[in-house]
Image (cartoon, rainbow, N blue to C red; front, side, top):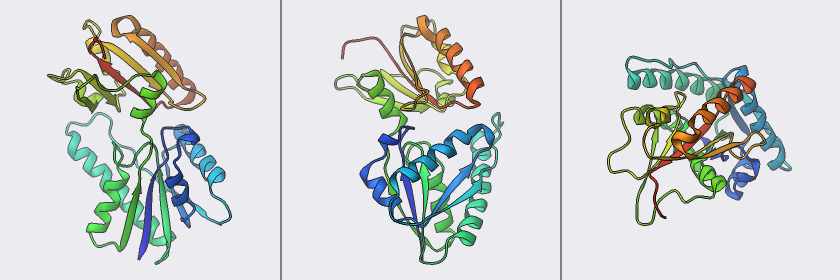
Length: 253
């Protein structure tokens, strides 16, 4: 039986890697590293740096798995994602079969936490339910949501109030009814611009926890153009960007 460890490694700062994650990394024989193209080479490099820093007194191998591109403007979002996951699944099955022997322990190093807006868990579980012989454990990690709040020194929720975590795609449908604090992830379209005339505060962050970190906060209408400009410059310079933000109605915590 093959063993898979799905390890959350935090939002970008190696210091976010937990003791549990380090222990798990030191059990793995093979690390499967997604290849998302030249523009995401920084993410591969950070994974390698984490391995070199935390794995001690054991040999391990690194295996790259090509990650197919996804249509960013689909007519049917759900079916497009399902097709994308199916193509990833085939690549994972091939890599696990060829590179991880029966009885071996492999690992995937996942940004943030494997249970929040990441496909690795779903792909591995689908393989298992289709009969691929493996068992897996999940090691939680510090998410961009937690890092964002910590770096801005804010609580995510108002006293006694919920906080909603959603995506830019869903936010485009409108600010959630009854919501006070909304954390937005996976927003390549900067959907916050739709609400520039509303009385909202924003706490925005990119490359959280890394040397390239950018933090901007304030009344949305006052700072959204600065966010747009800084985001565009950073993305052009690095070739990629990972950002998230908290939108909230003004009030007293």
